Image (cartoon, rainbow, N blue to C red):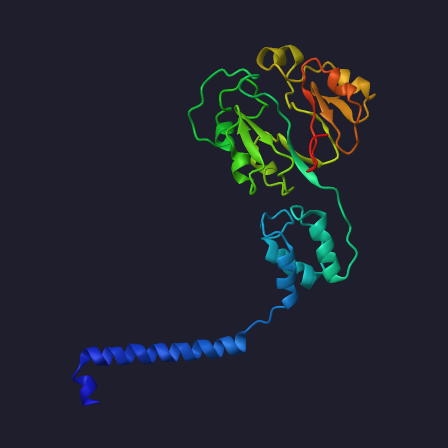
Length: 275
């Protein structure tokens, strides 16, 4: 004891070391008695998921979704990025029947890049679509079109969206159907559509036809020709705009050739290549 009291450095070392040993013992006891057992199947199901942690399933990430599959018997088909292969693997592991749904692909309903859409001013603000929308846009005359500032491209976890000449463009073969891009667009230009749909009306303007012609070479002018081709089934007119109903499979390619503005395009959503 005299040795300790006469050597303050040694005394402090013993006190700190002793405290550490006591804390370690307490933690060891706590770990032993407070340990929460996790079902090993959760880890197994997590391993079957793609690990993107995009939240498309409605849960915090792949491990959280796996936990709810095991503990709450959640449907096994909520992982869009994993596709049919993942659904089948999890269904087989769980011993349940898989209900398969068609893959969804993001489509940006605008075709007006910097070469086709008129720009009235130069934008020198924050490179964020939401921020630009707060001040009326990024300088393009069309108040409905893509601002091309890349908010959707930045949030895409797999790089399926890129900016091409001031326009956001989706690469369908890379899209994992997570849908994260949809909520980032302040103008609601992005939609998730079934990959089997290959005819798209790439415009969202509700301005009158003559006004559209003045500011965009590929904007919808509400001529109604496409809607007449399909007798209003799958394509309808709404607020000066031809709108595609993706719940109806429109396959008549005359809708494309009849469009005087070349607003309607044929674009495959499948991973195998162009339609």
